[in-house]
Image (cartoon, rainbow, N blue to C red; front, side, top):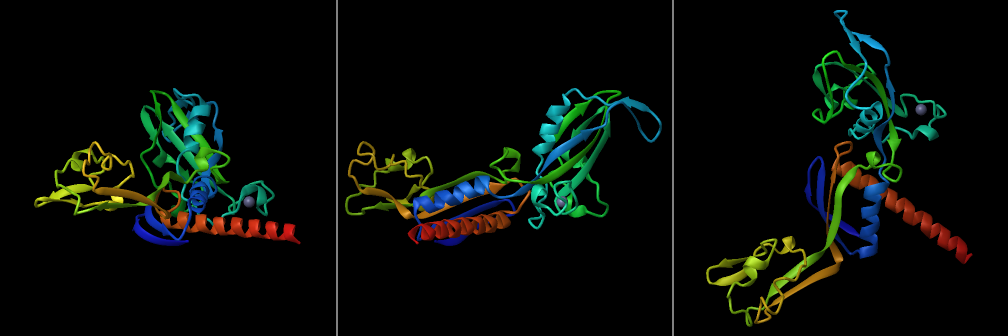
Length: 281
Ligand SMILES: [Zn+2]
């Protein structure tokens, strides 16, 4: 399997996989969706009872939402992930929670106001690297006299256990399309141009040309004999080459995510190989 990057941004990746098979790229898709570890808020402690602000004004620690819903929303906030952190149950602390396996945040707001993900502040001083990157995810709207004070703790997990630990979204691939027009047969009527949902064809002068071959989704609308009466268009997908793309939620960069996925996939294949060879013996 070889990978050629077509486009790589902080949170999205588009690449071409060659010398592969549908089974292998599908395993890569599944690893990207459910096996990449990331940090997400798992434990939330709510302060109960009255809360006083710096001026001594008293608030009630309530919000219009149940605490469970606020906790659920906190869980879905993408937390910047350092892959050197350890899983909590495999950490040297024995699962108690320590700086090697947990990131703590505090959230204190008094109403009336809107509370956003950016209001989550890391508990560790000078730890700007773990500040939530996406500041504007709405969590709850507080009314007059209402306040929220919580301590939230993030830990590593994978999408297998809960969607909040899923790093990627929009993970998908398609066979590399090949769209060819047989110039000898084509009458240049242009009937294929409006039926293509991805605008693969256009007229250049009097001739119909393929202008964006990679955009083709193999829907075969252009090759329909009712549309292309001369049967000049041939559309094929190559089952050994794939256009692959995915996005991340920002907890990890697209590059880190892809490298981690390939690493996990390699480990899985190695493990499988060992198991098979032990059967042979
Ligand atoms: Zn620990």
